[in-house]
Amino acid sequence: MVTLSFACSVDESGLAGTSEKLQRDGGATGGFATTGSGGNVGSGGNVSVGNGGDIGSGGTTATGGSIGSGGMEEGTGGVSATGGAPGTGGATGTGGTPGTGGVISTGGTPGTGGMTSTGGTPGTGGVTSMGGAPGTGGIPGTGGATATGGLSGTGGAPGTGGGGMKCGPGTCDGCCANGQCVRNVTAKQCGAAGAACTACAPCEICSSSGSGAASCAIDPSSQWTIVAVSAQVSMTPPGGGTWDPPHGDEGGSAPDLFCEYENPSGDVSPTTAGVTDTVTDVFTANWDQTITPPGVTVSASALMASKPAWRIWVGDEDCSGPTNCGTMGQIACSYQQPISAASLMSGGAMISNYQNCVALQLSFVCQPPSVAAP
Image (cartoon, rainbow, N blue to C red):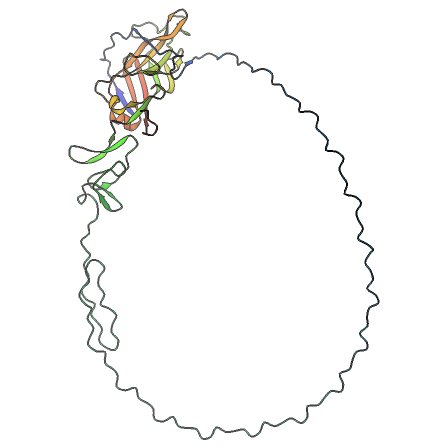
């Protein structure tokens, strides 16, 4: 939130006058809010409860008939059969006289294994293996496996680490993402001088300054809506005395505050102006209501223009006749100054001590292209 403060030297001439206000029934957002009760709530009539008729009976529960019998009870299987007298196995047979295994055979005289064979003269390992030319480009070269049976091979000179350089300040004129230098920056990857790439917010672009460094900035073509959050006015109006007569135009002598947006200034219609509810008899009003017309957006370039065509003003709602209230307002402050890019990027601005407004808080809501008005 950006705070804008103005000293008491601001010209307040002419602020005692009134200005046309968008009528509450003219298609504006908002309506009329009072501090009184809203009246008795009308009833919608007696609710007639209809009878759906007597609950019908489903008839006598049908019986499934008598339970059938499964026949007679378990029959008898007859007299248990007897297996007869146990049979006898006969007399136990004898195996006869045990047989002998014969004479144990001997293996004969042990044979000799012959002369012990020799393995021959030990083999030589050959010429000492070389580790090869030193490896290049990164991982140090190895000298190969040590040759068996001979002298150990040499490991060779260590390989070089290659020529790559780490992305960062001094090595990248764009931004760094995953260790790589991004030189063609976009709203999704924006940055400069080797800093980490960042994503810009909606309604922002990755813009290069005069020095060539890129950073996120407000897109001049982006579309916005404006919300009047709250306002506080001085205790006395520009001309002194009280804001309203003792009995008030609406309520008592305290102001009846509203906030209105017009684009262009002074053009009051449902398509060019938007207004908040009116809060009666207060010096501080909290609305938090959109004041751009329904379905209408305003471009960032128009908001930031050095001489804006639009205006936002806070007024005390008055009557232009005994029965014609809500069409005029006494001006507390009329703001028609450029909105800074910082205010749009932060999403709001607090305008302090401006004319007869002690404070006016506004917020700005980016409208992505998919929902922005044409």
